[in-house]
Length: 159
Image (tube, rainbow, N blue to C red; front, side):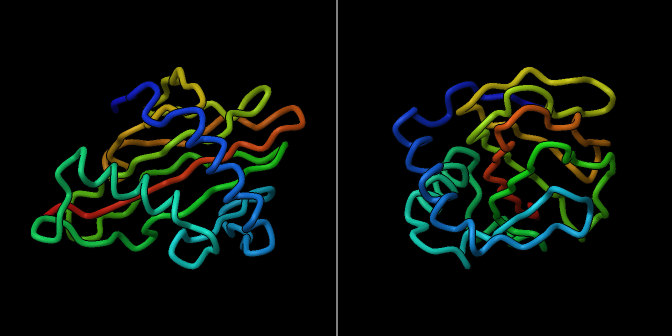
């Protein structure tokens, strides 16, 4: 598990929040739990900022067409409303090392804290959380307050 503080600027974060608002009508309920919705970035509108950040992650971690393939979930925005949470789980192996990068677009007022292998992680808006969901049990605390927990989640299988 790695945390990169301030992976994006506040201006980029605000642009991502606008992108999320532009796509509220495109959100699909996440079958893994109530109060959870998502939208794949390549099926969203006005997604230039999200694609730019996805490419920055790929460049930062040297993920290119020669060594990766898109993971089943790919890249998506995750919006978890108050009372929602990520259930604890370890992702199935998909014939490759699954690397996932969660960018914190909006931290809720309280709760929503990511937990990896029973350890709560410090996190702030703009942080990039890098981990192996196929090797680590992960989930989150329940979101509380009036703000949604919003994350841009990008995943690839490294060969």
